[in-house]
Image 1 (cartoon, helix red, strand yellow):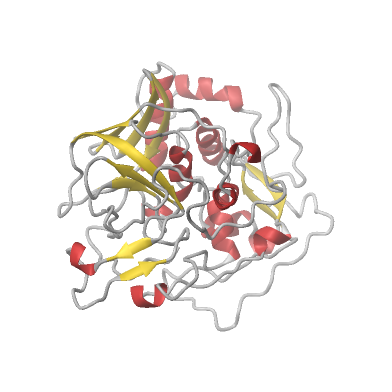
Image 2 (cartoon, helix red, strand yellow):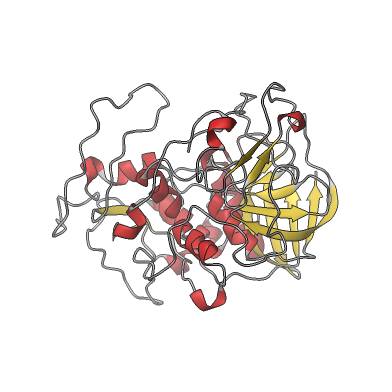
Length: 400
């Protein structure tokens, strides 16, 4: 996703901080329908939802994958179980280690953070869940609107929403991955393995624009469109119960992020500054672990015991340059519209510590590898999942 205007490079990259002086808490007490979102309208079922096999049952994908992808399969299973590996890309790293450590702790295994023999043996229960699946991109999901996010806050404020820049980016969030990973899984625009088992009615991908930039670090040109069959990470736990969600825009957000509406209720979350994790507990039971970004040298994580005051879905953001040490004081205050590419992403979880919260991000690949202005930041899909777990009064314990 596009970085926002006031991002200043630090050791790696600095993202905008978020506090209650910025995030609009108009629905922080979970009032349904209090904000608008950039989500797809929530009518109809999710045509790209996972179809999980039963115990011992095999999956016969429309196009057999030509690779085993063991790391991606591990990421997929952990993500489904609530131990988030962050971006699912088939690569080992910090977030996968945190996810493995959480899974090990929850299952009384040695906490190595490694795929050791005992851990692999327990994960083998879900060996029938393949690493990828093939989906057809629905017309309504591909409809957009899509528009690049301007660099300047003043220009962002003029937009109706800070939504996705492209269908490729929206698909990447839907399947908890990156655009680059989706392109890798679909060489030439066709699902990997298509040469061995062609998909009927599969269409070639649109040709890249001749004016598309090829500068280092720039996103590849859009590859996908409505009706196209593509291979994606086999994310799951995405079943939605519309009857249980009154806010239709929030329901659409959950669908766009591939996040199910059935989540455990937790009474405590523990944020570890040293580990870069947020652990969620139902009593003494560990039910979820997420890799997070926690503050910076300028705005350190506020160590202490706080509690959740409320949750705002798809909040707008009040940008005040006077409140950011790294902002240009000559800039004017702006009210930025909601959307997944907004400074706090799709969720703001308000805390009893003034000016602090837990929220999403427009840059999921930087989680755990960046700095914030003191708040706790997760990927949009992890933030949406956590938002359904916590409630007013949930303890938020911030530790060193």
